[in-house]
Each structure stands twice: as C-alpha cells, then as structure tokens.
Image 1 (spheres, rainbow, N blue to C red):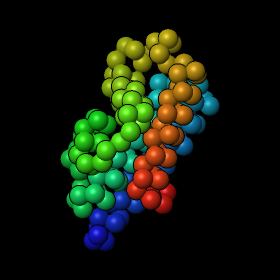
Image 2 (tube, helix red, strand yellow):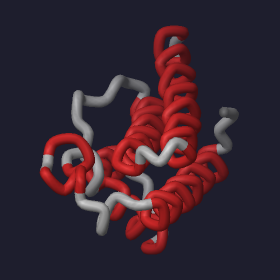
Image 3 (cartoon, rainbow, N blue to C red):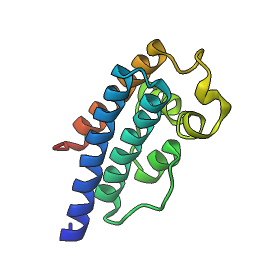
Image 4 (cartoon, rainbow, N blue to C red):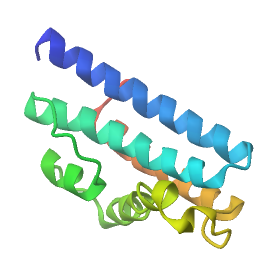
Length: 133
C-alpha cells in the first residue's frame, strides 16, 4: 500500500469514528434526523476505507451504502446487510425530504436504534478487516 493510499485509509477511518461520535452527540442533543444522517456517514466512511484496502485505489464519489459494499467485494452476513439497508435510507431522507421533520421517523427511539445498528456494522467491519480506529 502506497503512502497516499495509507493516508486515505487513515482519513476515512478517522472520519468514520468522528461521524459516529457526531451521531451520538446529535442523539443526545435531540437532533434525531442529523443523528441518523451521521450514522449513514459513519458507515459510508468505513466502507470507503475498506474499499481502498481491498482495491488499493480510491472509490468513486458515491454515497449508496449497498453499492459501496458491492464494490468492496466482501460478503457480509444478512444481518449486517439488513442494518446497512436501514442506515442507507437516511442519506437523502434525513436531509432533503419532508420526512426530515416527521417525528414518527425521526425520534429518540428510532435514532437510538439506528445508532446501535451503526455500531454493529462498524464493529463487524473493524473485526473482519482487523482495522485500527
């Protein structure tokens, strides 16, 4: 792995950790749509790090988590895949759709559940890839 690729992996891993911590802070602040959006960002960042490790190149500028998983070439358990699909829904919805203000979607219970799902996904990839975050 070249120095530039190693720096890119480190950047995405640090971004993932920072995004996850931001999601937790937004949950505690009662900013549920932002908490759930940052969950998506945390998973996106770790997937980009995994892609770079797997392919030794930078990924395209995409944000769809299922596509990023596919691009890594890693088989993941159905339970993790289901969590990724749930998390992925909040990239657009939490930012650009009227749903952003729907308290039936964006509430403490749902945000806390998505944060836990995100933690599970991050831990699975960290363990699978033996990552140091």
